[in-house]
Image 1: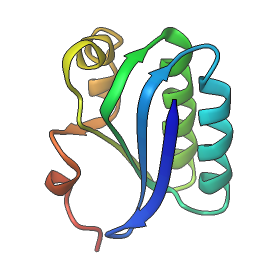
Image 2: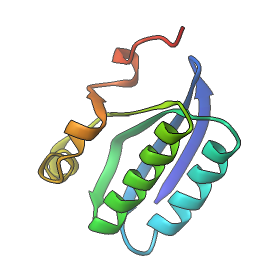
Image 3: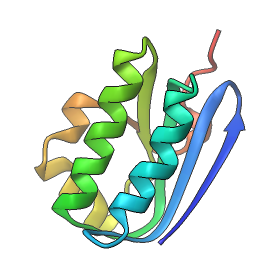
Image 4: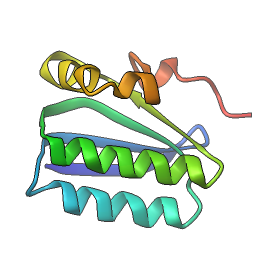
Length: 110
C-alpha cells in the first residue's frame, strides 16, 4: 500500500493504492490522523487505485472520517470502483460519507 497526501482545492487529498488490510491500515491510519489532528479536517479519500480493502481498512476509514467530522470538517470519498466500491457499499459507508466519482466532482470549498 502507498499513501500520497497533498493539499488541493482546500482539501486534504489522500490517495491510496494497493491493499488496505490488517497489515497496512495501521500505517494508513497513523499517517492520515496526524494530518487531521493538525487541523486538516476537510478531507477527501481517493480510492481509485485501491485494489483491495478489508474490514480493518474499513475501520481505518471510519476512524478518519469521524475524526474529521468531529473537528468541524467534512470527509468525502471518491474514485470508488470494482470490488472496493462493492465493499464500501455493502458496509453502508456511502450513507455515512458522501461519495463522488472523481475528485474533480467534489464541490469547491468556500
